[in-house]
Image (tube, rainbow, N blue to C red; front, side, top):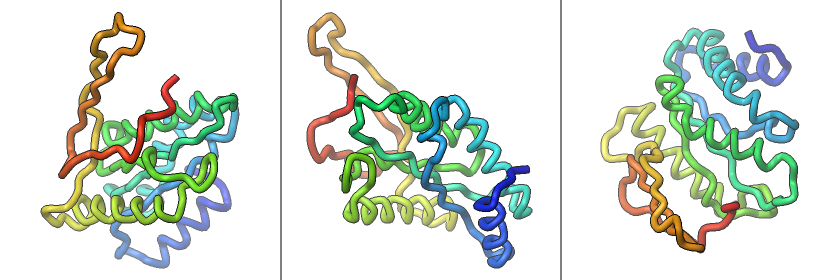
Length: 183
């Protein structure tokens, strides 16, 4: 089982809710700040999901995971670890049933790493849409958006184009600015 004060406190709070618990939202990642954290993340998050489900007795408890936001510390040695964690979070629904990821990559930032108030408002709506669909089984609400395909067009050009396709999009994906962070 998972040990630690924060985990035990979370399990106690869930126990207070009892069998009424419908799902869990997970947002945050302390491993991002540890050298090599990206290599440890997959086992750690799966242990967390399995541990909470086991310790609460809710075997298929829905998990809504927020994919960590971007940051602008290009000189930071932890950048690659962060990208690994983000990719694992993107793939979580293929690793465990009843786990859904919502991205925070496109949200406006308050500083170099933290989502702004406006960004949290958008994130809250995204999480609500997933909860309504997957936790409460309501129709006509948002679904998890998943990467379907990446295609490099004209790779021989100095500035090739990249076409990215997604599944699960209801409506349109809109960019609030030019893509950044490629390197």
